[in-house]
Length: 289
Image (cartoon, rainbow, N blue to C red; front, top):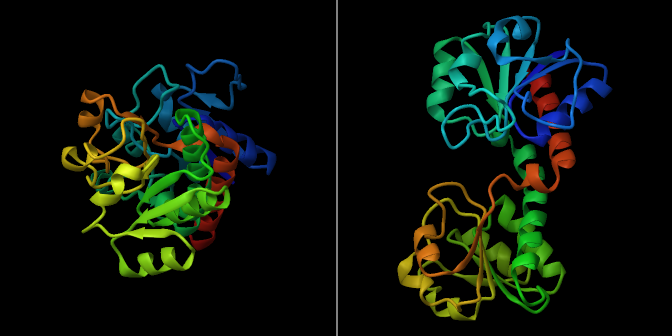
């Protein structure tokens, strides 16, 4: 098959190599400001000529997440700003655009141009596999930021979705005392069955002062100024969720709390594994076309 990769982080480079090794024709763009990697003239393309380089590609692979903080295409290694619209405008109706966390308004724009998009992070297999490097990365940060061992530490995992489940399992496996904050009764029951301490959203403030580490996976404000003041000063806070976050960042900064924001961990801590998960998910999508 013929692929074009546009924008992204290290995962995009490994996706390129994985697809090339399988014998596919692959072009890559948005890496003209990345040192240490060189491509031949037929492989790396400039964003000023997207149409020509997308022309023969069946699949266009965008970044994960699709957009950066400025709402343009997430392309940190590009000299030029790449807009989502500039990519979609160059595609034809028989081409497919695949990326991660594509906002609804951008999907609507693509649909208005008769371009079919797929969000890989909406695929269950991708979300589950992506949770593994996310959890490992969070544990790595916890070890780095904490002055005590994770073994025998009181660690609260906020949320018991895909990331929360895998994270709690890993922490429990290394001897941490795991506290799971979950709203759903089914999730609470599973957490209890797995041997974790279960905290309810309506009554968890009384347990906050004994936590050594808190890791949030919920994109909804839970820890605010009213309950953050209950924490120990040396409590390690790790934010894994996207905006609006689960922890009041401004309050933490103003009061010198030990908080780390850790978005897109798979691409930072395990780009090769994350790239393999993306490629496998893309293959699964192709099978449905």
